[in-house]
Amino acid sequence: MRDFFAFRRMITPTIIEIVFWIGLAVTAFIGLALLIAGGRAAERLFGLFFVFFGPLAVRVFCEILIVFFKMHETLLAIEQNTAGAPPIAE
Image 1 (cartoon, one colour):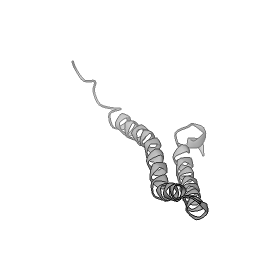
Image 2 (cartoon, rainbow, N blue to C red):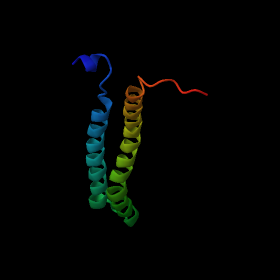
Image 3 (cartoon, helix red, strand yellow):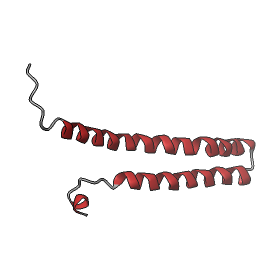
């Protein structure tokens, strides 16, 4: 709990995972609704497009956000590994 209040543990990656699952459900629902209720061929085609590429777009967006947190974790590991190292002479 101490790490949580000192901002050493990030909660945003967990929130991003929740957003991914919600986005996946929403895009699938919208795509299926367009496929079923779409009157014209263009609406049904858009629904099919939405079913296949909507979840992919949500996944890519969430992965881009997660990359920033992975970079942060890696930089912290580098900082901990080099904390006792002598300075680099130029």
